[in-house]
Image (cartoon, rainbow, N blue to C red; front, side, top):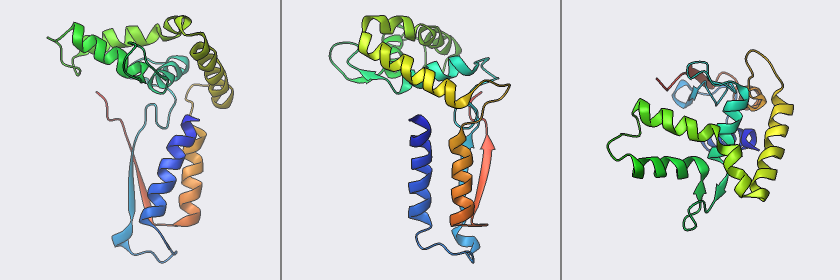
Length: 169
């Protein structure tokens, strides 16, 4: 599902920019896409020492919404970030200690979901499906990235540039 979100986003951006695109596209209409490598193209983060399963856990935490506090519906990731900010007002959200505390809570996401059996069942299903699609390997690339490149090649040959970067520290 998450790969579809990424691909669909790229698809609609490209369609809006290149409506009626032809092979003799002018250099003024070149689409420039900047991608963060970690968790966008590669399903792991070597800099933060996050393997495939930990990355999938983090992605699912970002896309699992509920009323965790009984009042506001938000993702689990947003919920724990807000909770940490309230408990640690002296820390910036960009502070390494803040990030370490958040990462510790993210690792406990599956255990926390035991309080929410329906969400836990969905989490386990989504995680199994993602592991099945991505497989195991030294470096796992999301298939949606290759699909996006294929679509760009077909729709606008020579009309795009892809920049791969790591945006984090």
